[in-house]
Amino acid sequence: MKTLLLLSTILAANLTFACPNLSGKFLCNDEEFGSYEQTITQTGSGDNTVYTTYNDLDGSETIVANGKWKEADINGQKLKTKATCVGKVLNVQMELDTGSEVMEALNMVQLDGNNNIYNYTTVLFRNSGQSMSYKETCKRL
Image 1 (cartoon, rainbow, N blue to C red):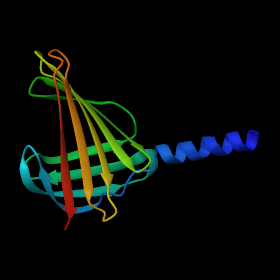
Image 2: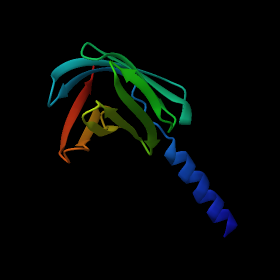
Image 3: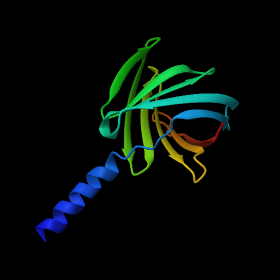
Image 4: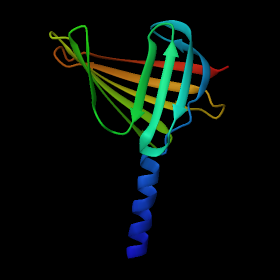
């Protein structure tokens, strides 16, 4: 019985940090922003997986999938991000405080059978109680 418990604990820990390999160049189609090219590099593994993304819309961004909140100040607005991997899904949580509104977003990034990326995003506006969802697909080039 102890062996079974230990084995299930080890398997659960491995699934928690089994980050997807998202490295490559993609042509993305976003419901809100249209089409654009996205380049992703990936280093490290497990809870030290680092993704660096680049596109012409946002420039360069680095995401560390270590389950820790990272805080930044962007033009007086407070942005917090946290990334974790569960199975082969990268989950990125974001919270932006503009002073008049707090927005929370959850991005679930995963690969399909052809190694194309699907990103599902849900945004909640805390003060107004409104929410929206959209999806983005990125085809590997």
